[in-house]
Image 1 (spheres, rainbow, N blue to C red):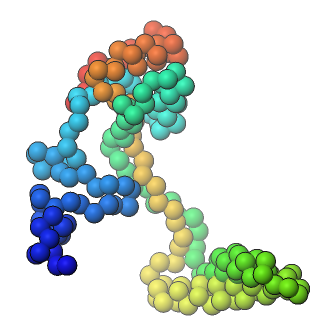
Image 2: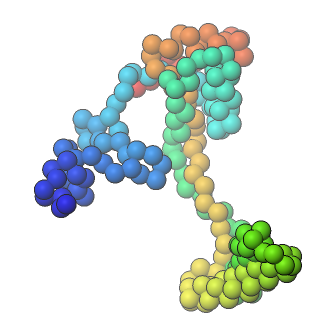
Image 3: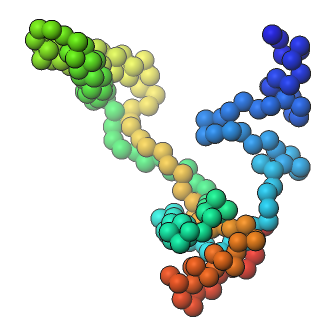
Length: 195
């Protein structure tokens, strides 16, 4: 059935009317009334602002431990920065070793799978899978690195970092959340409002 004969089907570049396909992190939210970002929900209040994610996570965990409806909360990171940490130099030899290790794990898995159904020497099947996987992994690792042509001769890990993490709660639950947080932060002042 084509998109023209089914008006409710999702079509790229067409807003409204159609349903959106699911995204990699869950269901994609349609833009809000202003066309920027997801639709706004109930008004929220910031009950605390923290310099790192574990601190904000501890606050939400404390609320959850005290039977607070944590589905009414959110942790909002602001001033996001993408940090790519360089882990080391990548050479053809290192790519070969990494490929061999990855291939060995996969070969071990396949060997164990076939070894379960083997009547004879199952250990030989497992070892053969491990060795064949390591060889093919090494070959693919070396070829993949050679195909980059030296454009990326390093390994890295990327992470998103925020300068600040705010814990927000729907406005109707803010007083309850503040009371619960007062038990772990006696005398602490929390912000009164946020959009």
